[in-house]
Amino acid sequence: MINSEIITIGDEILIGQIVNTNTVWIAQQLNSIGVNVFRMTSIGDSKEIITRTLNKALEDTDIVIITGGLGPTNDDITKNTLADYFDSKLVENKDVLADLKTFLKLRGVKEISKSNYSQCLVPDNCEIIRNIEGTAPGMIFKKNNKLIISLPGVPFEMKLMIENNVFPLLKQKIKLPTIIHKTINTQGIAESKLSEVISDWEKALPSELKLAYLPSPGLVRLRLTANGNNYNDLQQKIEDEVKKLQLIISEYIFGFDDDSLELIIGKLLKNNKFTLSTAESCTGGAIAQLITSVSGSSEYFIGSIISYSNEVKINELGVIEQDLITYGAVSKEVVEQMAIGVKKKLKTDFSIAVSGIAGPTGGTEDKPVGTTWIAVASENKVISKKFQFGDNRLRNIERAKISALNMLKKLIENY
Image (tube, rainbow, N blue to C red; front, top):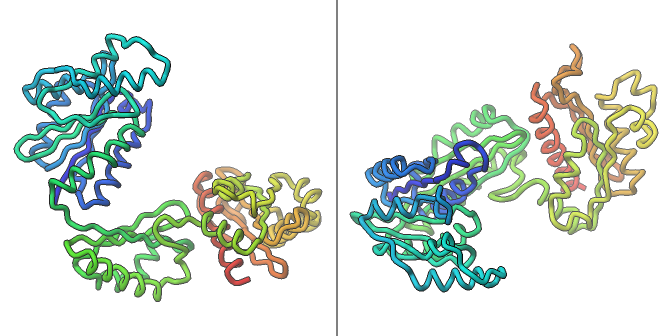
C-alpha cells in the first residue's frame, strides 16, 4: 500500500479564518488513484514545526503533499524552509520568471516588484511545477525514494497542478493499486436500523470489499470500497454485492454515487415536462432553495409560498380556519390542504407542503419539538406522513426537506 500525508501550512487555517478545503479535495483525489491517506496535518507558519512535521511524515509515508506558505510575503516561509531542509540554495528559474512576467502583464502590471521577483527564486535541487494561474510555482523533492510535493495554497492553482502534473508523475513513477468506490444513497431509515437490516449481507462481503456508513441529517450513504490489482474482478464483485443489497433495501435506495434527490427529481420533472410548487412553514423556503440549487430548475419549478403564519395558510392556500383551530397547524388535515392549495394557486402538476415544530421552542406534550407533517400532491392523489425528527432546529429542517423530496420522488415515479 502506498501511504501519503497531506500537510497544510498557514496560521489562517489554525485560527479558523479560512476553511481548509484543500485537504478534503486532495484526499479524495489521492484515494481515487489508489494512494492511501495515512494522515492529515495542519500547522502554522513556523520553520521548526514544518521541519518536525516533515521528518515525521517521511518516517511514516511514501508521498508528502504540502500546500500553503509559498506566497511573496514575509510570513510565507515554506520555500525557504524546504530549501534549508534539502540542503539547497535558491536560484533564479527562467521558466518561472517567464511565467511570472506573462501573469503580471495580463493583469496590467508592467514592473515586477522585489517581492514578486522572489517567486522566481527556487531551490536548485527540486523539480519545478509551472503555475500558469498564479505567481508561486510548485516544487517536487526526492529523498530516500520518497516524494515531497509542495504546492500553493490557492485552491484553483493547487488543483490544476495536481491534475496536470502531480498525478501523471505519480502514475508514471509508482505502481499504484486499484481502488474502486461505489456509494449507495439511502433515505428513510436510520443508520442503526439500517445496520441491523443489512447485517448478514455485510458479514458475507468478500475480503477485498470494505463497507463504510456515511450518515448525514436525513440520509445514510453506504460506501463500498474495493482494493486490489485486478480492476475488472473488483468491479464485478462490487456490482454483484450492490445487486444483493438492492434486494434487501430497495425501498430505501434513491440513487448511487453523486446522485442527489434534488438532481433526480429535477430530471424526472424535466423529462416528463411536469411542474412543481411548494408550500413551506417550518422549513421557511429550504425546500425551494434545494430545488433551485439545480441548474435549469426554472423549467419545472414555478414557485413557493412561505406560509409561516396561519393567516397566510388561510388567505393564500385556502386552509379551512376551523381545521387550524381543531387540529392545529401541524396536522395531517392542514398540511394536505396546504399541498392542494399551493398546487391549485400556482397551477402545477405536483406540490410539496411542510408544517412542523422545528424548535427549540413551541413543542407540547401532544406535539413535541420535531413533530413534522409532510404532504405531496399530484393531480389525483395526496400523500401525507408524520415524522418525529428530534430537538435540533437545523437538523430538523435538513431532515424535513430531504424527507419531502424523497416522498415527492416516489409519487412522481408511481404517477
